[in-house]
Length: 322
Image 1 (cartoon, helix red, strand yellow):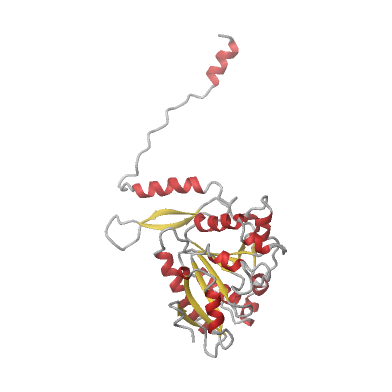
Image 2: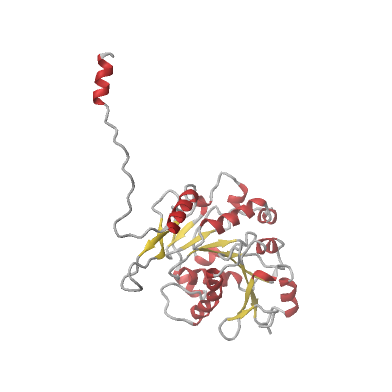
């Protein structure tokens, strides 16, 4: 052996055997959590959204000794999070009679608390293979207030303790979400669908309302109908549903009678809300619109622009509509 080789051996660090893993003293083994952690470590490596993972949380002063419950914690990965934050114009929301997180109890806020309860019930007990966290807000015709309801529902849902919200402007032919919020946006949903080099994380914006994110409509495109009906859209919707089960994705959809892509989008949703305008939407028009989508995922009708505050009707053979 040469002198150089001997010196190299002397300078090389001595490799120590890896210590055998030991469980924390006094902590019970939880196989279910191991399974959760393994599954999440595999799915979060290429996550394009703020990832969330299940962790064990020990309640203080409640329940039997040693009881554990599942809580929610943020992943420390910064690279996967949207880096842009937009500030929502609170005064603009007030002028449009929309709710804000800072508001005290108002009639509009209370109505949307009632509306979101049905959605939350379905989230807690989803259908097998369903996508209860995908919620579409639509109407029969333009101008009935679907965007107003989608924004209010998203803000109200973001106030929940256990959920984050992604508001998607899916009415790409006539986008209105960004304008209503008073924010400046650039690329969005259409750009993701038309350019495979653009990722969701590139266009999703954080907002200054905690736990509320925004996916704008993006660059106008004459082939919007085909894009929303494409396989790329189906893959994106599935990604949104499966990436984070604690995230509620609210789509502001085109009206059912005005755009064919609304029915295609509805078929991929777990829950559908149909907005009707008091004194304008006829029963015949409503039945025609509802006939274009599957009734199994329609969770309710919202009566908008009435003399009294908006009312919530459950969907049972159109029985609530008069």
